Length: 232
Image (cartoon, rainbow, N blue to C red; front, side, top):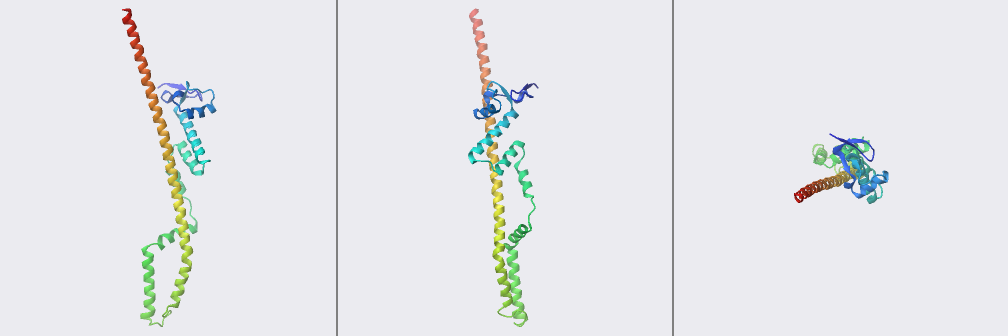
């Protein structure tokens, strides 16, 4: 397999990666010429070098649209540059150590909103009332009207509101993290599709140029044949 020297870096690359400046989009060509003013459309660069400037073009486009890059956009662009999947970075973020309050809020949300808690609490109330009314005949530790039970229920009600707010705040944090991850995945998908369109456009233009070159060669051959016929 042959090689060629890039007019950008003067490095050697496989001939299969050679791309003419004629097939580079004007916006990307302008970006290349900012760093390499001597590079013109009649010169050549490699596909890997072109991909670097494609990524720079995408980064510049996002910066213009949103004003400045946030940490989320930077993570997505880094994933594109490193050619890694975004799920790897998201999985690493999920492994962060939770605080004691966050763990408590998660357990409260999972247990307090389940049928297990409702049935268990109902059985507890039934046993409390039954023991005091029927077994101890209202002479036990909490006779009717169950003042001690009312105190316990009032205490639970007083603590219930902040506990519910804790669990709601924790759930909102999870929802925000989930929304951020969805945004990052959607953004990367959009950028990947943009780059795929550019590559397909490049292949189409390159193929059309090859067909045009073949057509010119055929026309030259026909002209040569016509000249020979005229001489005869």
